[in-house]
Length: 183
Image (tube, rainbow, N blue to C red; front, side):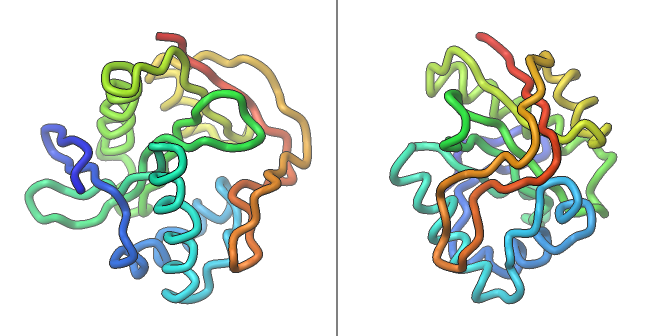
């Protein structure tokens, strides 16, 4: 199901059919460094992650990570969406793109659309984001989107939520920075 479109992109719900793409994306070096290892070692692991993660979150929370694909070629480029994490009071914006599609403005274009969706359709009053202090590109994008630094969350941020493959929805052993935008 398509959530919305931008000039160049289609943003839609992830489905089990996206398991090959998720396997590829979640095993790229930047994703592993800055987002973390989700223990996705096969397309079957990716399918289980999709079912227990984004697809379940759509049903339970009404939000989730969405697939971002090019409008013209319908090529999957990355993910961008809204996440309800049990460690945060507010909805979190998250994104990740295949390295070959970074630097073309896709993350900014999709994140702007997601924030507009959060404000106008979901009527959220605030959206947050978390990242590591060394993720310079992410911090630059968050700032460009209008999010402001709030505080450092500390080390060993962990979610209590565990998927069927044993991975956490969010688990990171570095200090995290919290950013926010109020609408």
